[in-house]
Image 1: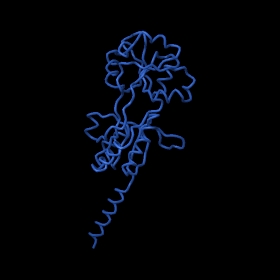
Image 2: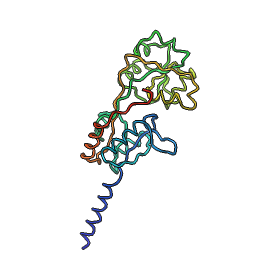
Image 3: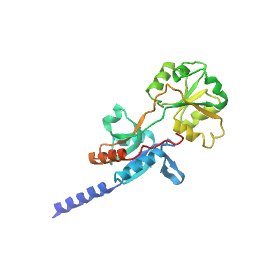
Image 4: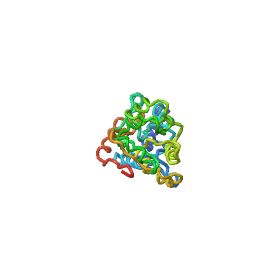
Length: 248
């Protein structure tokens, strides 16, 4: 009599796990994903991901994570989970599974002080600008800007100020003239320039024609997410309109 009872208990545990909401993690990167007032998950790409899961008939709970922890939870899973907005790399494909594409970033742009715009007129491309030693770019420590710009920065070498740890710090450096310009995601620039501490700084954006479209973002799921669930997610991605970044 004890064996059937144990089997019933295990079956009940399995059903409860199957009915649990899917964990959807996100990092702090406004306006893509963020905590809004009242600690409510928000951001245009997180909200789109939640619509995708709802369309797929999957209940979800969204939770904020630091970058490294989000990836570790995919690599070493304890429950089915996905994390929103990651770029596809060979290393991540080794331990996780990517959905179809959620969004492609617009091209990176340049941000500088409004009263310094005339200094940039002679440079018609990012390649020409980043080869100019007299103008110092500001970048974020450990941050990637896509293969094209990353290679230009590598060739430039050490003549880069990469001490900023956040986009807010980097834009403030440009606004106060501590660097000549920064490279910034268009959606992030549109959002940050309206925030306290930055909205009173005279910042302007410049688009350069040689900068390609940005990276493609995906849901990165761990290997406890069933194949059938990932198929439903991909079907929902295909069925819904692609999101539009604020300010674009």
